[in-house]
Length: 331
Image 1 (cartoon, rainbow, N blue to C red):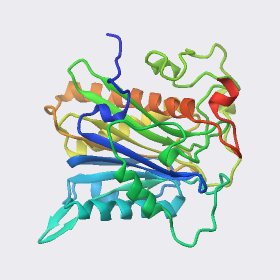
Image 2 (cartoon, one colour):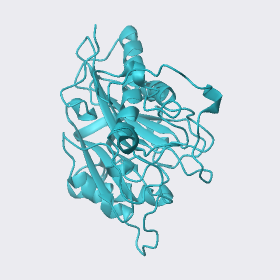
Image 3 (cartoon, helix red, strand yellow):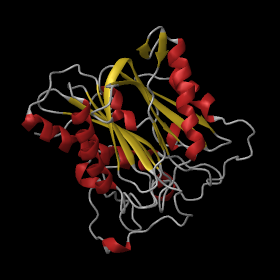
Image 4 (cartoon, rainbow, N blue to C red):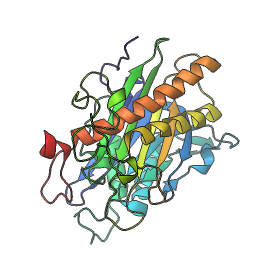
């Protein structure tokens, strides 16, 4: 069976999910928020050696809180974690959150990437990321832009601009899998000095150029890496589906999605990346059996790989870019 994407080829093909982006051209940074009309089950897995996260401990299967109200991906390094505070404040004003007596506490896990050396303004007096979080939530919808948007605004890879990517896959049983990712990797998404993507074997149609696999492959141990100070990288993402999953099963889905990162970025999960993937399940469809869970994990990896390539392919050139956009070099 030929793989198929959802109608938008975005994570919002998982019904009920909405995504919003907010960016600041002066900062060359931004925030991306995923939310839904109702809380959803979530898990997380971190494989990078330099992560920056918020509220990931509560996503462990043995914790009291089993569902979240939103997930946040942000630039700004540690400062970007404040984006989740802005999202939580807005959700609380909407009456959303974990009920504790009369109080409401929105659950908003987050992950950040380092984009503070991309040429943006860094002399601000007030942390701008809380306001960016609010703006991203306010703009959340079923259709959103990818490329140099949201958390991918100032992202880079070893040789090309990074960005925000998304993709979806429709499984034979009707389940929808979607991926959302901000790519700011130490490694690269393309093969050697050419335009072909490492993720090419998983491409559906011409969603990132339709070039197919490269004909000549360099020594994989000679894959380029970003010439930047340590801990200035990180690829962060979300994998989602409309099946009914437990928090433990969401964690396994996030683990599987990391395989897609390894297929699309060489090298990945390094000591100088903070690679982290959240998983989300809306529960609109029945719980999968063991066989279906295996296929779900495989689809998660393939969909994440495609989303990463789409992020690079869609990045647009801007004045002062430290590395060129794919479209400027090859388009």
